[in-house]
Length: 102
Length: 154
Image (cartoon, rainbow over all chains, first blue to last red; front, side):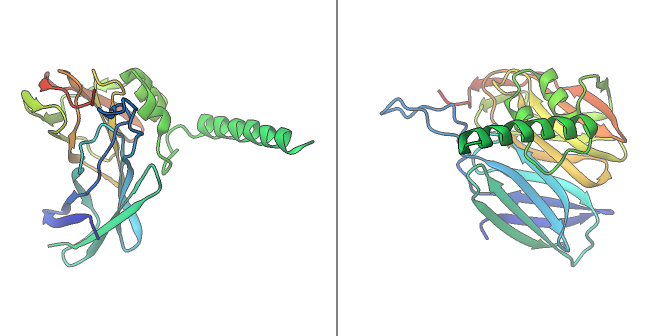
């Protein structure tokens, strides 16, 4: 559970804020000592689900900052519901988190 | 047929298959990470790869929130709101980045988009957004964000 997230009702929709921990290597940077290119390693997909159904997806490229922050509004969940957020990176590593809608 | 030829024919076949399904369903290709779009080097190519068209209509309904001057290009907070009903997909691009596309946002319950994140910017650039609603593509360009220290490595 390394994705921190919060979800709050805003009128009819839910405002979700999530903070992930990831290096987000672009694949363009070079190691200053060896001069070798550091291979790309970044989150590719973040999915927000409610009752097991995906309701929002973000496809990320390497141009998203280190330790990605994501905010979005989504309709569907109501106060008291739990939403799950999961991420996968280009090496197949996954992470997840969940929040109760306030 | 030996193993090598067999593998080759598999690759050709799957390549053809992908081409056909993309041609038939340009708007509903989804779930797989759009590598073509993230690799594209021009904003038009990104629009083409994501939505199968670069004929987007300019819209005043899309508003950006981004700093005028970003001191650190590695972390530029941006957000986007669009007063467009039933939107189901949003893409945010940085015109002068080596690969312009930063992220796409897909809404399974279409609505008015409101998204925010933090992006890397290599140098001073404008942001370009694409919003798809009911099969129509809208676009908007932000005012220039000045970057004093680039954030794309190097």
